Amino acid sequence: MDSDEDPKVREVPSEHLAAHRHARIVVGVDGSFGAEAALRWAIREARERDLVLDVVAVWEDLAGEAGDGHLAVARERLDRALEHVLRRRDLPKQVITAPLHGAPGLQLVERAREASLLVLGTTGISSPEIPGGIGLYCLRNSSVPVVFVPSAP
Image (cartoon, rainbow, N blue to C red; front, side, top):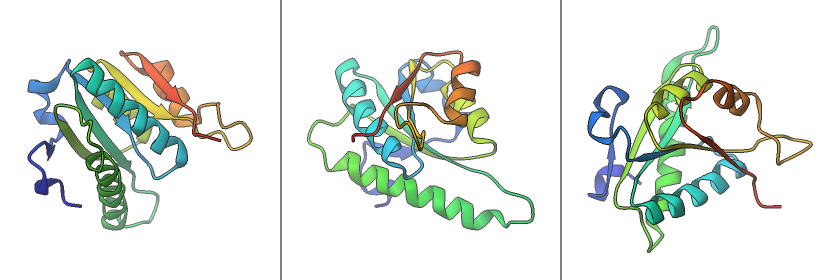
């Protein structure tokens, strides 16, 4: 689903966030069950607080790998997340998105700077309620509250 299809959804690069600085809930999506749970929670919270929902997917070049494939995966994750968002009748007032390039923890923390919340799913393999390494990085470095949403059993 292309974000241009719905006027409530648009891609906003980080350098153009000035109009949405404080009135956002940022949620990271990576295709995991935890990210899906985090997205559902963030949708409800953004609607209840009358805030903009900011859905982001981070991609990173690994040594010797071409970046275009990773960007395509990030955009696909955003498209899937938007399909989930737009199926709901109880949408937040506005949804913005962005594929972010770089170290995931750093990009999430930077995107959430001055937002209301950063929402992430938990990814612990043996304990699904425990945040993974990226989540722990965000918890230690974020200037805004971080909410972890465990995936449903």
